[in-house]
Amino acid sequence: MNLIDLAVQWENLARRKWYDAEHEKDPMGKRLIEHGGMCYFNCAQQLREVLSSVSPRPSATQEEGQK
View 1 (cartoon, one colour):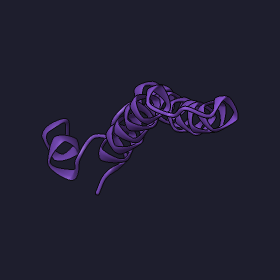
View 2 (cartoon, one colour):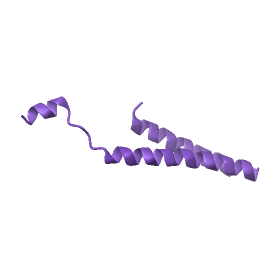
View 3 (cartoon, helix red, strand yellow):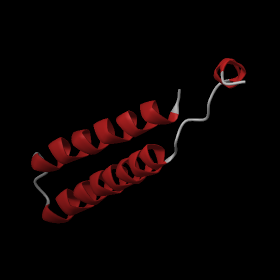
View 4 (tube, rainbow, N blue to C red):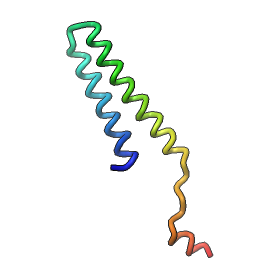
């Protein structure tokens, strides 16, 4: 699993929690489930932000071609 896969997994977990929260009858239970979904969503967004700001390093073959 790579970091992009991890972000996708967290986003899927967040969606699932929000879906489950819609079907929760207890208001406090609903809030708890939604909170869990927001935690996963926020983590996924932060990970995607970090990954998008990191420029890929050139591979060894690319470096050889530049010499």
